[in-house]
Structures are given as structure tokens and as C-alpha cells.
Length: 80
Image (cartoon, rainbow, N blue to C red; front, side, top):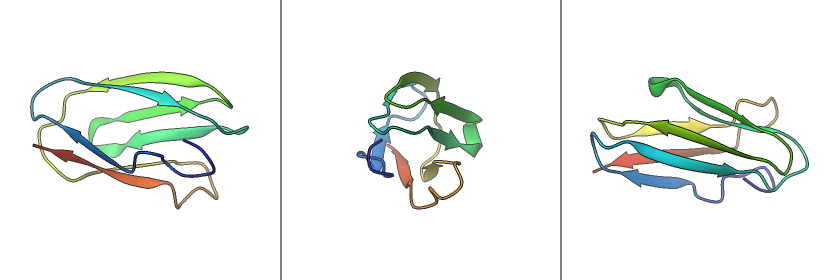
């Protein structure tokens, strides 16, 4: 996360395998990494780092930042 965007907009994972994400925030304000389908909602503080894990089973998950004004921070998770 940097300059109000996800540096990796598209992510890939294998179906049924646990995905471990290392979320790094290079900005001076907080961001979230949210995927509603898997109840992933990590808040990453300014210049901070958080880890998140989940097991995806289908393709096409949308991840986004829930901070007001950061609506452009979106990406997709493709499951193969």
C-alpha cells in the first residue's frame, strides 16, 4: 500500500490452500485490506505491517480499502 493504491492490484492463489498475506503500508496514514467473502478486515497503521490468512475456494474476490476517500484502492484475487 502506497500513495493510496495497492501496489499489487491482482493476487493469485490456489483453491483450498491457505493464503498468507503480508500487508505493508508505506503511507503516513492507515489503510485496510478487506475481503467481505472471507471476513478479512486487516487495519494497517501508518508505515505499518499486518499479516492475514484465509483459504479461498472460488475466483473473483474483490479486496479494497474501507477508509473514506480511499475508494480507488481496489484489486482482485484470482483463484486457480
